[in-house]
Length: 374
Image (cartoon, rainbow, N blue to C red):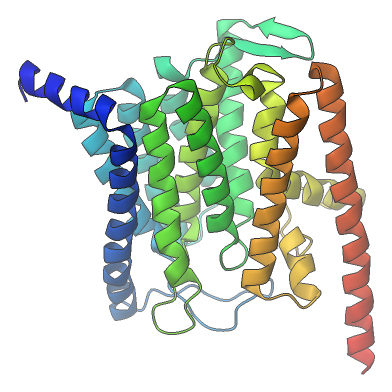
């Protein structure tokens, strides 16, 4: 592509912003819709089915290679965007996604150890954190901290990447939950990037939403077209969400969006509320029970809703709505409260939600005991 062609494309992009957003969403959606049936055919021909364990909320074998389609579509979209405007982040994201895809695919085929997964996540984080466009040099006043040392910025970035990937991976426990949560998060980020004038990251966010909207059709299928995203899918989507999170933190303090200038880390916690809240909650419960915080169990909030009799769709949709309400609460409160009061208000909201789910947990256990004697 010569310089003239490149400038023409950039000019078209600037003058047709919404058109490009719709194009990226459409390509992501229909490409995912096209690839998933192909993946299903291969997995069934080779008899590559997800095994059932005692914590599973499913009683039938289902292919868990949705991540293969996710990976192909993500690479396709990023490659298209790179042909229009080359960015460090795009190149780094493709490399990091490829690493995590291989780790996740191995785990979907043959269960991997926690060390292998962590090594893969740290390797992916390494490529992301050294992207100049994702460099974190400030906490924007959180806990009174503004500028931070470069080394601390890299460490914090790596921690965020690993934490977000794992938190997102952990909520992939019932049909629709991880995808609905991913849609809410990616669209919230898309709105923030749109308002702050970052078109490249708007399109990456919209790409994630398009992939997950298409995946929902197959994930909720009750017939032969049903598929899970698997670890390969949840790790890749978690990685992209982590990348978008780093970019939000890397935006200048004088952002055009008021809620990005007031307790930005709290804004990120609000957007990522569902995966972060559920992960912290189950880890605390495990520690209080004398168990390892990494020991798998059925204490996740989606398990509570299932035990209360909700369907997978109703449980997932309810939790997605909860995440939206938390985000809207933050945006509304940020208009009227200063930094410290906003932090306290959001902590209060989190505490109320935690108490609410504890009450629901007790109710679910009572119902289970009554049903066992019936």
